[in-house]
Image (spheres, rainbow, N blue to C red):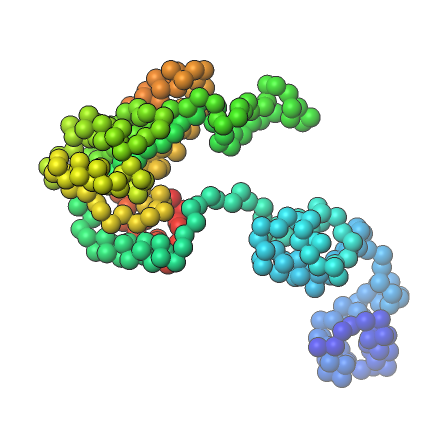
Length: 331
């Protein structure tokens, strides 16, 4: 299709003045009839062919420049808007705000990247194989599993926290989030949940070794677990040590021994830790003792329905991992 520039518009007007019809003019010049009709209408209204001055500032980037910006951002998604602009030396001079607007209009919005453990090829393959195997199991059997895990809760959490404040008051003490080095005082906790919604929580030593872990299992897990339960634990060193495995065997605890490495998205207890930490942070404990008391209160406040809902999500997690070819999922 030919471009309708100024010379083309002159030809359109001349032919129409000479009595050539709009349809015939469109066929001769190889342009759409609607273009011929628009040029002739504007000529009759204004008596001139020149374009009227347009409102607003002209675009500093062509369509090609916009496509190049989006292409660079898709190739290197972790580049900032400034870095995307400077990565192409042929780009015209434009503001960073314009670059952000161009990328946003193309659906490339700035987002906070999710943090997930690094997976190698072997771990991806094992995750995929594990999910395919257990997806064939009867979903009702998941109620016999006991999921366990440890978590550290800090007095001064480094989790993101939003605040509503007036303009220009960002550094006002009232609106700032207080931080300390290394998170300040903290507690280590161990918890376990069962398919019927029951749960148990205990406080761990600051540094958990095999001996301390076995003490927790002996005092907390043994009264909690039943004869038909299958115990799940991740691959932490104190979990897979020889003495711990001998301890579990001597107590006749059925262990889920093929748990895939680097798979917190498959451990439903991780979601419960996220809920617990968020609720504890809102309570704003002042001391390490308050931290444990509030943590225990918020743990007890978690309902059975919340725990059962996590167990009901296991089948969907397995399906999503398979669909994502062994990579991490949203959980």
